[in-house]
Image 1 (cartoon, each protein chain N blue to C red):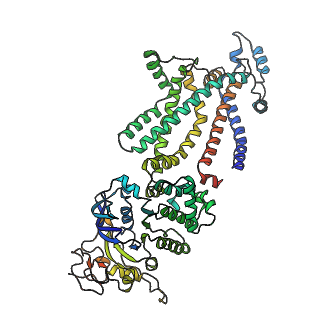
Image 2 (cartoon, rainbow over the protein chains, first blue to last red):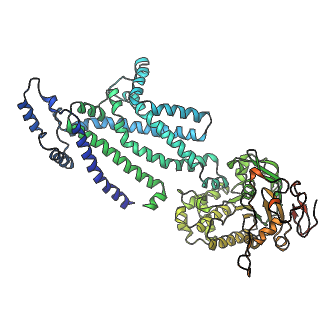
Image 3 (cartoon, chains in turn green, red):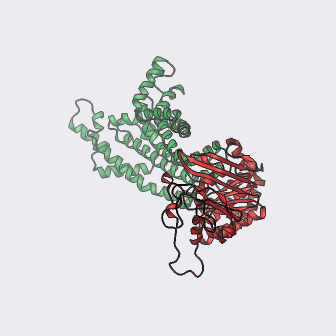
Length: 307
Length: 321
């Protein structure tokens, strides 16, 4: 198990390098540059040259990439060109907000997704299943930014229950968590239902019945236990995704966070900030996948045996 | 009689898969239930253990009495209390019979904890004692291993241990060795029948291996296409089978000194439940079929040696036309 863990972490190194290269190149494909945002109206080409040289943007891309990467590997994310502050400061300000939103939404969708999926599986093809699956279908197709606006309209504007925007206290969290969490709930519920139905057809259940086990116990202790293995895999993929997926929702609710920071920096072509944000999101995905693999090994002795 | 099955019919949906099956089983008796695949053996096993609803089946006629209580009319809760406690079931394929993500120990402990009210420690002690009786080395270590770490024969011993853990009166074993290596099959059958004999339990042993029947059983019931063909004490069946199907099954056993190539099967295929032949369902494959076999359903009748046979032209017996 420890050997497996070390191997999995080592594999992350080339993945990290590849991801960083892709992030770097893609950003520089976007037309325009951050200097446009810095120059005052009427500035001449000489001033542009001076500014470009100051931020090292005149060097070949490969050299720029190397300078950035060696900085990152030493823990230095660089300085924001437009915002003129250390990127690490900007990230440190934004990340806790995104993490809080992401983790709450993940917990929300995990809990309700598994509960709804289980109910649907247990009442397969009867009305509770059909109701849940219809709602879930809607939930998984409605885009987050539209759902967010709808929730604001109903709960903030009409009912006045929650603030429209911002991140002052817990009440401002409710609607964003709902918005991000509902899509996830739909996904988790669907996966749970399918996995439960599949696990419910396994041969070993016959012997549990033959031993005189209560059907409720068979469902919860054995069927659900097996169904959770694929559910955990899906959830771990979402750990990373949920930070990135919250981007548009943060903008809709005007919440501080990684998403808002990313969009703002993108508009300003603030390369170091955009690169750092994307790198963090990519890392979150990589670590989520790693966590998923480890949890799966912990849950299934057969997976452990195959390591 | 511990078990009394009378005219039992079982259906799944509109299809009647088991029709008018009757047999008795006394305490301490071992009965073999033989027949080809699709003859209704497993369905009988599920009926005996009250597990028919799991595959969408139901008893449509007849009765099934276990120690004086009618299993057909018992509420689910009562059946559940019987299962694992007084009636134990050994399933067909040990490779898939155990929960792959649970350790062996708790899977066996469950039976004595639930049905005998033992606490965790007492249940584990009982489990270890049972596994040791089943000649499982290092029973202690086996308890903390997972099913995939054990061989098929070992897993089937675990399943047998589960069956014995509730101190049952009746064990229903559905082809307990079919999925195992030939070398292990004999071991398992021997072990199972020895423990059953020692404890004076009754056993319904479902198999398609006539050799196993000859070796282990007191009596035997032969099923064909969902109906009972013949039943009688084992020695009587092997000495003088009366149903042509029983005779054909016995002829399928390889014997010493047989000329190469002389072992033949039964011509034709087992009738499909969706298109059973009229009259006697065996008549299209039967060498003795005569007038009336394709129109009249043969009834069970006692001929000799404490058995019954359902055939119009039985071997060593008067025709019934």
